[in-house]
Length: 179
Image 1 (cartoon, one colour):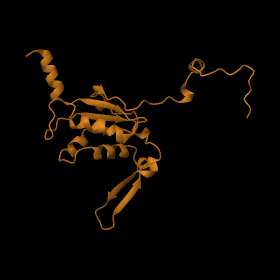
Image 2 (cartoon, rainbow, N blue to C red):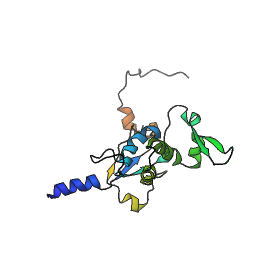
Image 3 (cartoon, rainbow, N blue to C red):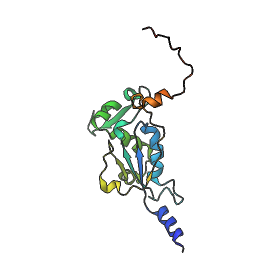
Image 4 (cartoon, rainbow, N blue to C red):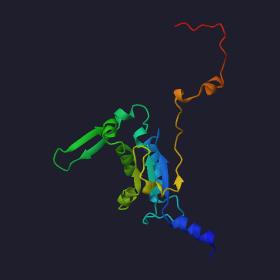
């Protein structure tokens, strides 16, 4: 068997580690992409009953973005198990307590409700910022693309970029903007 074939089999059967930057990403849209990697459905050997998924390291989960007023509309349900133990918490309150919980719950609910759900969630590593332990970062071998581009803030543009930015029309030199 050739060495290229062995490498191909190792990539197929081995567990890869992927890095996903959650900065300015909607966790409920990104969860569909991450669930494919956690469950292994992106591999040619995928089967529902086989646990062949990969690890995913999510960074910057403190900087997620929800569209519109979803921070105030989205509610997370929890029950203690006791009578009248139900509670509903708004997304922004959950995010203030734990910066990784909104992303974790989005992926948890996107996974299939099978006995493999717990094992797949154990391969998910979420960090609120870019500080990841070295022993985990050492394993990362690929990166998942973001769903949407991170916008650049206006104060991060240089003077030259602002001056050379294409303009629809030029103001006359003697024009004074009245306030």
